[in-house]
Image (tube, rainbow, N blue to C red; front, side, top):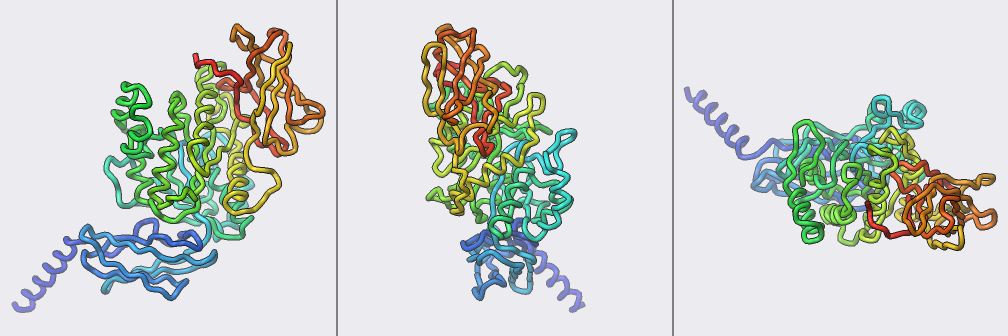
Length: 490
């Protein structure tokens, strides 16, 4: 009988302890195959029994980090990380409980986010291809110990979440590589090759999502309140999620995918979103507020983490001749003036009139990579940083002349002078297709004429949802859509 009573009280004590907290565990982000940002401090966190001591011991150093589990069962330590290398282990001990995280690499970590053009995997979507997929997947095995991915694919969350269940770090090779964001794949594999270090990819993109779900209500209010019509502002605040559809409600992606990873040490952010917000002429305010929110959440008070984003590509959007997209791209690019240490990749010559997902993800990743190498890692590429854009417009008689900057070795290529996508308008403000040619001697200058416009006063390039424009500098960086006029959107 005494033994039964003792067993009863022991079981009751164990149950009480279990109810008081959680078994020792780490966040899903702290898992086998993880990549940590080199030469910095990164959080290691998890849950356990309130009041218990937790010891975290990394194999790359002699220091032991300790914490006491808080009343909400959470614990967290900041761990100093080594230079690029590995594999390492991380041991977490609390009382008689012990966890070991294995195969850890130290290197460079980047966060990728957005909607379907970022989410589009290396293997592509159904009947929607990514150029170069077959060759990349066949060679993906060589990156198993160079590139790792954490697909932060938590569900919509109406309250802030502490963790992202059901996910873990994976080696980006074979089927795992096929599932990785194509832009993240091309960026991370080339970065690893060039720097000679492991690269970690954190991907929380969600196809079809708006930008507001990636932000807190406070951040949205700070960006828009009093700056847009009240009715529109109330509509944004009142959006509700619909089952089975992409996120539209404020904070539902922030709560479920971004916040649980906040602070995990990383080098920078790469964003590709906007198609679902294309009618919003205040997107620049939202994007700037989101960049600030994320940097603050990652403890980046000096804007050291680069924030790079992509302009949305040409696509018919119901009517190729309309101008919803170019006015939106114009607004996107204005965000560069609002976000310190930011950069935009241009997709103007990469679009597809009938498919919203351009196949040339390598080209987009390449633009990000050049900026990162030049500005973040201090590796001059000899190509210059920035996209080609108009610097001056002149109108004389029947000719419009556009002078560009950031053209590298000039616009176009040898033997090719004519370019597509230009239009001219006179005082009547009616635009007509125009003939445009790169100057034979000044390769950063284009002349534009049209028989229908004998006295032009305005010139536009690819200023349609889809205009067929193909202008780029000598290194293939596209010229974004632009206009010389400031006429209101119709």
